[in-house]
Length: 234
Image (tube, rainbow, N blue to C red):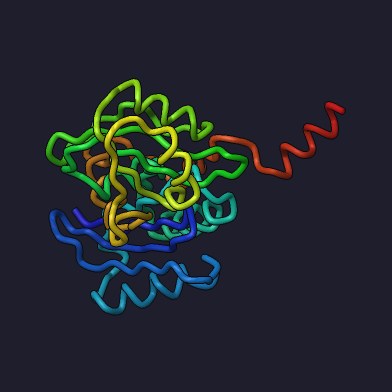
């Protein structure tokens, strides 16, 4: 099976192609560029480097949210356009699940943290048995104190990763009562290679949708929508 994966859900832009057990290529950038500037050029360069015939793909995977509203829309539009043009199914992978899969096989409780602003985080809790991932707490948008309380309640060592680790490190140091570590730089943020590997599992489990059916999962209202509702309520 050959699958293209695209992740523009956060600060990182990443594209990758996986064929069965092989990562054929991956292009990841985390440096002061908008995804509208980077995503298509990265995809084009990757396709050239590995001599990819897009028609040979079995499916296209995308980080389906949560994350940056703009980033999710750019990734979603790119994938929908490609999938419709190529007549390929879409595998929509929850963003937090894909981040957690960077640490497939890890012995500790895995806790991705994305900065959702207002002291909230997009997060979840995961445990691995080999490469199989068990979802302990499905991805959600919660106060940082809530997810740390869940970890303390479970009482197992934890590893944190994601762009929220730098933001929430003081809270972790103050509130986390179990032993913990932080993932190293090469696996601590979104990577399309991890997204692709997990997406193949989801595809085999029958979780693909059509391009028309794909919709990003924002988990919460945008700031503009929240402000409008607050004004209407007032």
